[in-house]
Image (cartoon, rainbow, N blue to C red; front, side):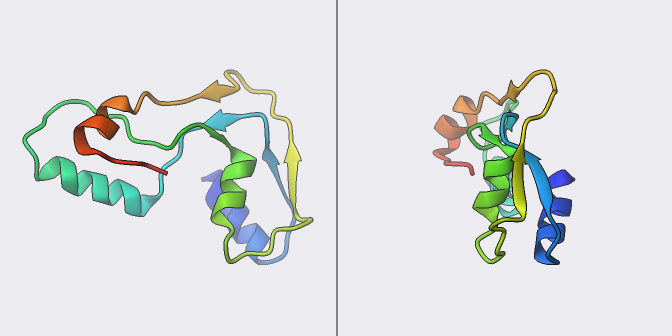
Length: 102
């Protein structure tokens, strides 16, 4: 995944360019595992979309870099993709399981 590779490159001192205008929904693995547990041990069946509020790749990497000095090496750039913003409707999972996903 791009974000994983970006974090590795930042950690070893390389520059990384990340889209600041392309927004997606993301989820941390530990949060996803917790959601799986809640869904498995519950009788509230259905289809659920799990993910964060929309955030750019650039801002997501910054938010994960709590122990990595990325200053001057994480470079914002504009992506030419379509759609620029693509999120998930997470209202059902948030309301059903009282979750706040990031």
